[in-house]
Length: 188
Ligand SMILES: [Fe+2]
Ligand SMILES: [Fe+2]
Image 1 (cartoon, rainbow, N blue to C red):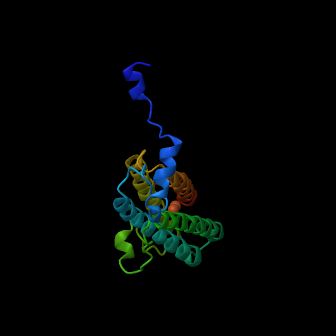
Image 2 (image 1 turned 180 degrees about the vertical axis):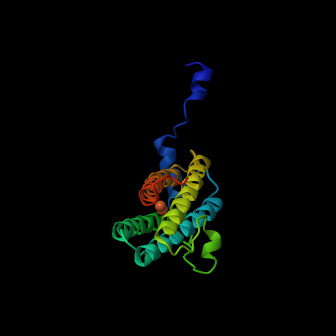
Image 3 (image 1 turned 90 degrees about the vertical axis):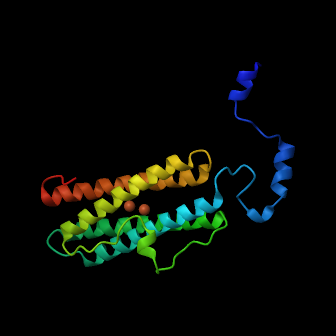
């Protein structure tokens, strides 16, 4: 094998070294020698993602309860379904923070400031749909960026975010469809 070829292959650690390393610093749990990211920064980023998901749970739950008007029943059911899925995201992100050695920040104080998406103030059904669509678009953009940011430095966090992102894209699509159905024309 020539030198260039040898360098282009990712380095594989032998079993003996893997075993020795795993026994050292066991208090760091899943954050091992090969973790290339900055753990503290990753936790900080994930706290913001957690806040974003909590705000989405709150907004969709409020909308699912408060939406009124003709043809609101189907929309309420959709809001409730989204609230449930946002709650699943919230749990996954909190678990990941915990795995990395952080304490998930569920403190209501400062929640809205930590979150990328907003809680909103809509009263009318159509405005609720629009607020949710905007919040989903913020989440989609934010998570896409984070997926690129984590890259190979933290594949587990990246994969989690990829899973969440695909659901957020569906959510954005659902909200867009509802907006078109209720307004007769696409808004965004
Ligand atoms: Fe979400
Ligand atoms: Fe969502």
